[in-house]
Image (cartoon, rainbow, N blue to C red; front, top):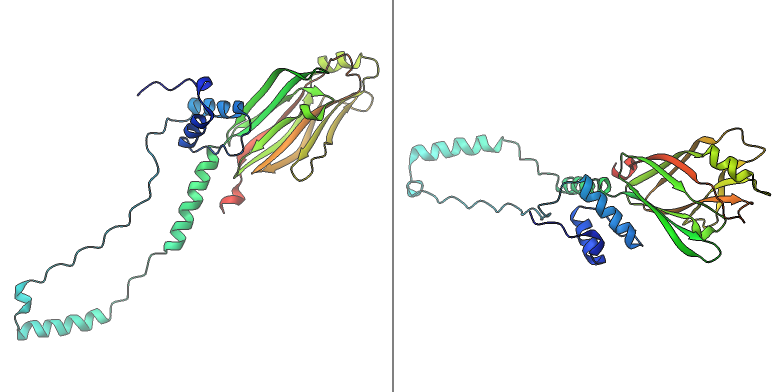
Amino acid sequence: MPDLPDISSMKLSELKSELKSYGIDSSTFAEKSEFTTALQNARSTMPRPTTTYREVEQPKPEREEKKSSSSKKPSSSSSQRSSGNSSSSSRRPAPTPAPAAATASTNHVNIKKITAMRSPVTAFQQIKEHPSQNIIGERNSSFLPGSPFSFSLHGSVQESDSAIIRIPDGVCLKINCASVSRKEMDEYLKQKGSIGVSLRLSSEENPEMLPIWTFARDRSSGYTMSGLGLRVCGPRTVRLLAFMEMGYRSGQSVDVHVFGSVSLNKDAFD
């Protein structure tokens, strides 16, 4: 088998083509890094495809058998047998036609399910320096259905620094828990005017960043929040932000870690 090309040197069209050969839907990807990460994950976790899908040819109708020359000769015994056969054949039930529409629908659902199983949830965040807006790093992860979800959100006061979470069709993301590091938070709270950090969410339907959990200096009893119960099914794009509540002027921030799971959307295949 020839060596695979280096992912970092591949063009965008080549990345899309190879992802398609693995059955991965890349229509929701925007950054090239999302394509490269998804392809790297596919090469590492999936067998390399060796065949392509083809439409199944309909079986050709069987040729009518040639009548033997003996059938052309009149015979009293054969006429009697034919009359008996005709009466018995008239009593036989007609064959039931195959449910073609139901079979086609089942095949469509199966193909859609296989595609969803190969389509990962991606999480991408650029880390920027403020106020220069220079990009100093990035965080990029992908999670196939059936895998646990975990991602560290870099804290910021800019909504443009939020992480982009892309959920493909037929796949659901569930976020159950969020936490902060005790050591990092204690150091952050030593800054004058610092209050805490909040986990915020926005969606395509509501682009406003709204808090779903806040760790506050004087109000929070623990460093972990469980039972968030956030479930989003694709195709969807949401944004998550670890918003620093004051005290960010020194440049110090705290990561918010989110945990959950990725699964197939069973409702989409019923």
